[in-house]
Image (cartoon, each protein chain N blue to C red):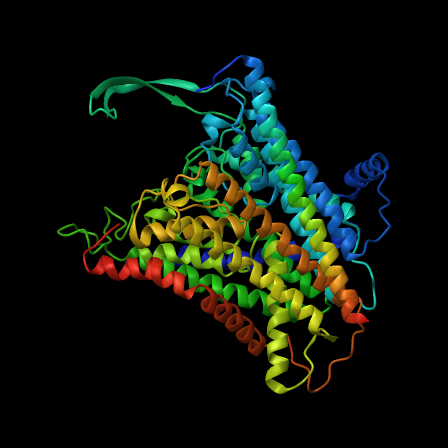
Length: 591
Length: 47
């Protein structure tokens, strides 16, 4: 670890604190339908859109209507993406003449992008045409983020409205989130990325002559070796910047290239790297301020922000420390920091980012449900790799995905307030509203679906040599971590992966696709049920006995509840995976 | 390897697509039923 590394990490969090307030205030204005500087351009567009689609913008929806609208929209866009993938050979902007995507992979990818997961069981540059990348995938980067944002706003309305049956209008929230927030910021951000060297074109792939010919020797199943001399290299092209901007801003994470944000065409410079990390937390951090504004208690918003920041900084510190340690299995190798080398574990990391910016990126992308990577998490030290895994297993509520992080965190807030009420023997209240049996039942449904699906499917895969283990490259605790990470990433709608697991098989495409669907839709249904229930309640004024949700005590309790729930649920499997691997590594074994 | 005529191959592809579209609709149908179940539970709690 270096002072320079810590300074860069500190700068990142200072910038996030500085950006949270203006972003949060702007989000509040947009969803309160107050005037913004974009109104002269966007209001006429909005009116035309509502007229064409028959939406009555002033008509409010109950929570069930809000959810059904969201499900209809998601189903329609999912099917669109599926058929675009299947028909891409007959569609334009396919200069490499790529064939139709296989049915199981198209199914998995369509669910993946609809659910904001962006799990990629394929190599984009050899599988997806430019048309598919733009119409099938990049559009979902906007839509899935806008859906998450709309749901978070609906939840905040639920806890702040009094004796109301409605939570807003899904179509209006979807439109305003897309046109007022995501599109303008992503457009400007894409141009900034182009200035850094991110490519944006529709050219066929470039063929370059190698400076020096390379010999490649392959051995077939009969043991016969064949040597080929390679003199050219194919360099993939494409409309990358436009997809890259919303990939980060919308916490989607699906790379235009297989190497994702480690690829120099996606993330060429340390500045583009910083901007990409900032854009991941920009909207989720802003939503804490929006919570405070809409609840008319800015201190409550900052208290939630503080809990998120504590967990995030703790994760970065652990990951940075773990990756800066020398690998005990490499004897007689100088692994110390010097002017010539970064020191520590540089395997799977880009030299232009180094250890500090790789571990910060890994933590940020898994705190949020982004899943973009600028280093390979599978190459991390066991405890370093455990940090991204734990972040996902905590439910990605540390700032979290666009919208999804906020409503996930608010479920933990409801649970914390409930526990605090039980401790002092009072009926639990949150912002003046009584938390009752139905609210806790729904909150527990939300919390229990998550580990049930991750652990259930991972257990089946681990016990199945035919389905689960046949495409696994590593054995022992590292193999367990790879399978666990895949299901955690799918259910958590993160999308990042530990390498070492070839996930483009029928079993993994179908099981992970189903896991992503459950992780998105079956979790947000009980979440919005809580919002609908809270919206209908009366709000009582705070008394001396009311548990305050604006103090450091509340932040501590909230952080503790998140960690205890996560630890109780996942500690056994973490002990058998990364913790055991760490201990065995110091005993001289690797996997 | 694909066997048979191009028509057979297309029929096979269409069949898989149809099954996967049905699977998608079933998943969303389940989600819709889940919404209804959560709403009914609230109704019971109030009565």
